[in-house]
Image 1 (tube, rainbow, N blue to C red):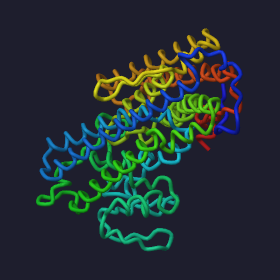
Image 2 (image 1 turned 180 degrees about the horizontal axis):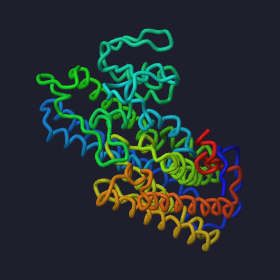
Image 3 (image 1 turned 135 degrees about the vertical axis):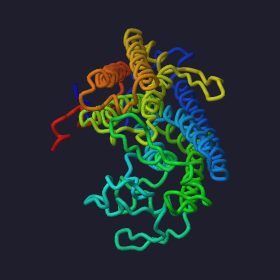
Image 4 (image 1 turned 120 degrees about the vertical axis):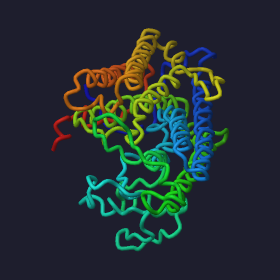
Length: 422
């Protein structure tokens, strides 16, 4: 089965939604969809601030214990954020912003020291091993950049995607992840990155340039908070994301929900984040590759998809945001398709729970995708298959609701596997 790469285009018809009961009107569904986004981005901001606090503690007292606390805070911060990814694709406000905080994969040699096996140059990226932490000046497209002072502005305005190279990721969760863990040099073997706490100890420095490493870590974290504040504000009443959603009308808004669900399910998660790495048996293709947290990122993506269908989100403090749902709206149009999609989404949660459990008890995600690991490969493939299966039901929902011009993101790894090896 193939899904065409595309975006939400033009106006849409919504013939069957006029029969929906007051309890699940399109307007109410869209309001609750926005409320869930607001809550999830607020949780992302709250946990990012907790991460900042842990990093400040690490900087003031660079012990292994405090490094572990900072790492745990990073993992906790990822949970609510990954549940927001279903708001991408259909919502341009989110998609245009997302690269600031979650761009991957990255050429980590841009940021800091790397192992010799990484190499010193790349034909695709002149800044492949620029090492900003060690070098106060760097040349980008013939222009000398002054990096004497490492600030949020330097990272976001001068270094992020410098030279128009997407792998030059200087900001966001993954830049912070690399700084906290360092490179994972284990390939598909056991173990994550193992940066020592003394890399942040200006009095007993390892790795060189500890003051600048601290500056980079704190600047990147401050910038992450600023960026998350922007998106949390965008989903407040009257914010840019809410306004953009409202401007699409009820039909366009419902189509936006399904576009996000289908694109994340198929092209992004099943394809680019999972099938590609499995085909190549390449740990460099895993999402949280320094920390070995990939299983949780994938799991939370699936939870996020389920959240918007069910119209229910559990906040980090345990409170629940709940209201009119796409599930209810679809059930009014075709109860069988609604039940089918709910079953497929539940099945995906099940396969990703199994993947998560294996990562927590047996082997990490990068080991699962390793060449010759028949059992691990099968667990990952089962999760991929469940995503593909649920996407077929999301397509049926689009048809039942008579939504036109809705297209999901595709992936060569699913649609044209031979192209991956060209």
